[in-house]
Each structure stands twice: as C-alpha cells, then as structure tokens.
Length: 193
Image 1: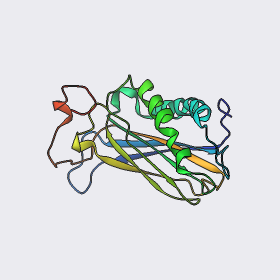
Image 2: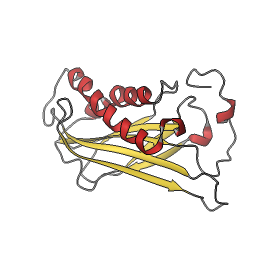
Image 3: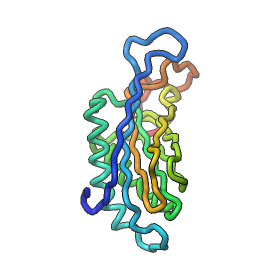
Image 4: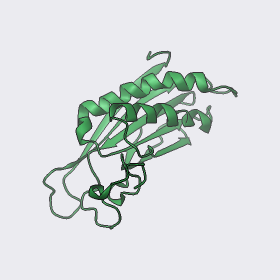
C-alpha cells in the first residue's frame, strides 16, 4: 500500500541505445519507465467524484518518479512522458487521473521544468502494450526529443486494475536530424519555445 493505493506490482525498464544504424554515439541514450499496477477502486461502477483518488495518486507518482531519478539522475533527464492502461472494468477517466498526479510528481523531482508532460491513456485488455510519448522537459517543440517508450506488463492490468506509468529519457533520439528547434536554442522557458 502507498497512501491508500493498493499496489499489486511495480516494474522498471531501461533501454540503452548506442546507435540506430548510423555511427555509435559517444554517450548512449537511456530511456526508462516505472510502472505500478493498482486496484481500481471504481471498477464496474460509475463514481461522480474522482478527486480524492487523484490526490492519493500523487504519492504513487512520487515513488515512481524517484525510481526513475535513481536510475537516470535528474541532471541527465531531458525528456519525459506518462501513460495509463485502465482494465476493461474501468473507464478512460480513471486513467486521466494520472495527468495531474503523474505530471506533478515528475515536475517536482526534476526542478519544475516548463513543458507540459505528454500523455496517453487507454482502456484495454490484460497485456496491452502502451506507447508513451516523450518530449523535451523545457520546450515541447524540440523535435529531436519527440520519441516513445513501450510500457506493458504481461498480466496487467486485470479488469479491475490500472497500470500507471512514468517515463524519462536522457536525451533526444539517437541520430536525430529532422531540423526545427534544438535543445541549445531554448530561450523563453515557457514550455513551448
């Protein structure tokens, strides 16, 4: 249990990318995700007020965000994202609760970066694989940092569960070369440019 959240299991994954068919990079890109499978207290019924559960989810977000920081070190994190997979006895709004809770947690441990935390959510069957979008933590339009990380657990979420996940990366895509705003050109720090 984490502050009233019934956690069945957690999972952490790390990908280390040395090249994408081009030359090996001096510093490999690391993408990591931290997930928790929790009991959905609203499974099978409609609940008009979800805000108390959303507030409880902040503690789960903090735990997952700290796991990622321990793996990657906050000073190296340049991209982030979040996502949720709601079991089929739940509704999409139960995944939407993660917008505030997961985003708040990552911003807190990363020193309040300005860019919105990109997100995705679905209602799906057990074993569903979710692609979480990533982008730069300070400016959403840095094309080199547009990326995804796959998240999923074979036996989750069960119909009455939700899989909540956070993701971070230490940089942009290996061999990114599609132009646009670069990380070095971020100036306004308003989350966009």
